[in-house]
Image 1: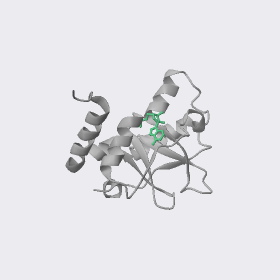
Image 2: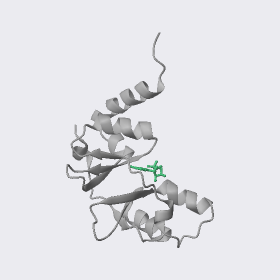
Image 3: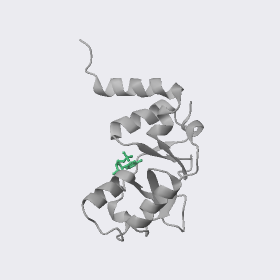
Length: 142
Ligand code: AMP
């Protein structure tokens, strides 16, 4: 099974100039846990990502929610290609300790966001996830 088979909705993007408050509001409205930050003049080119965890951290630190969301975003984006196997995606989610992957097409354009929830909702991917966790976390046999 390929990553593209699990993509259910279009990626939710937000301007890199938006505020933390606007990002939180968009996440709530769209019911997603990750937004892709873009320059609105090239909306298919991801610049950074912000997850609900980043928002919670900002709130707990007492940050001004009118600051730019970019200041709390992750700029080194972990990606997969839409043609990649879901097992490879599961391994990336596990090894990077994140719950979302940005999905790109062959030309490097934004194609979607794959969440851990999308992966576990699909029975066929569960075995791949379990294998990935076992190879990462279990000591080698002797
Ligand atoms: P998450 O567990 O996905 O909610 O995110 C945990 C942390 O990882 C947050 O700081 C996110 O900004 C970051 N993060 C999540 N997904 C990605 C991704 N695909 N690329 C880079 N950083 C990410």
